[in-house]
Image 1 (cartoon, each protein chain N blue to C red):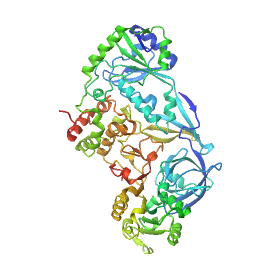
Image 2 (tube, chains in turn green, cyan; image 1 turned 90 degrees about the vertical axis):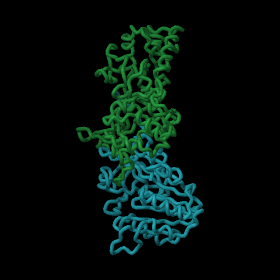
Image 3 (cartoon, each protein chain N blue to C red; image 1 turned 60 degrees about the vertical axis):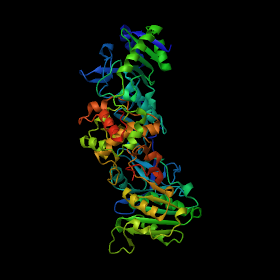
Image 4 (spheres, one colour; image 1 turned 30 degrees about the vertical axis):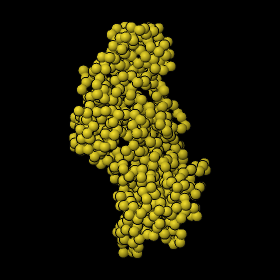
Length: 348
Length: 278
């Protein structure tokens, strides 16, 4: 069954049934404007309407602290590589975050493959959830074209009133549907409902900045010396909020942590940020991105230019988190618009 | 959270035993190592390894010996950070972890049959020594060879014994200069760039290979181009902090390039338009 429907009244028992596949994680309201992916035991705790969570689901694929290897100094310099895994089901992942997970998949599957990521990845089941409405003024999924599902899920849910329309993306998704009796085969009226929603969405989700998405890499290359970088550099506080909340920022540091017994310990990786000054510093003390403007420009290029060249994919999903959390109110859409104005790429 | 032990994730290390430690300057030591178990470290000049000490961490260090020396390898280490200071406290018989080798080394197959102009600045001599020794061990594969070395002051001169030997050799033109001399110094004084105009080379036939700080590259490249060496025959090694060595962690990234995997050795043509590369 490629397309199915699930009555909304069955959501509670469906979430209970999902627990056989692992810990169920879903968006939960923390305040009116703040949501977080957390373990849920009761479907009523799930926020079916939510704006992007504080942290993206990245934290389940690439934890803030992750053990890469363990050691015991009594065994000399021997290191034992480990992968920490847990069966989880991510329920309610929006299309922007699905795109983010796809970006991480591409990076960590690129040779040399990252087994810590890839092995853990196999333990995660992903159930997407469509945004019927536009979330807030910070998002740019219209520009990035990420407001519709483009794969990267086992199942994808669309809320169509009293039922969910479900697209099955993988064999694992197929099994979940087959093992839960309340799914029904989608009929033509369900497809009509979906089409109606998508047509309505096509009117709401428009490019937030009048630029051609496919010209963005060229615009960023040509705008390398643009004044906008100096402007955002002057405002940036180098707090690294933007990289922490970004669904596609994956830079990390590798370091050793000794256990309290002072004999055993682990080599871990932790999230790091190109926005921190020491990030590109070398032993001689030279820093290759010493200025905040250099670092801001680097981050933007790592979303709109460099990965397009390397992986043929934008690493901005339009989720808007970086703009939402910026203490200096540096806005991604405004930055792109200013760059587009300076380089002549703004459509008039 | 379940833990799975797997043998190869890219973060596993091989143990290597220190055979010999030689002090080169106040802050530089040369370590000769061999993999425990007799395995040979398969590397090329210009590549690097991650040196690991459990509880302290890792640091990327260039291979300083030539792969023609099969049974052991050498690392020239300046004590600047946590790991390198800890390394300096180690003695023959002690064991370290080694990950790698990583990266793209000097393009030896392209250099074969050509004249060479090798330029090193400061600790840049450490990785370049690997190539110099390789060339000397395969001397007939190459045309005329010039080596220029610039150093801050005579106290910081690395590999003094070998420099004296290279200076004596008839099949290598070796010149050395210091930025600041002391009363005992009898050699050249000035930047390494000042040596370039005086050397006699056939620019079309010559590949220039250099390792040093970015500021040296900017000036040396200008001199090389003035000398008539084509851009496509200029090779350099870029220093960055390679933390993972696997093209992931982002620390060594220059534009869309990961220095640890795509470099550290590049043709000048490849990086000349990347702002911030040199």
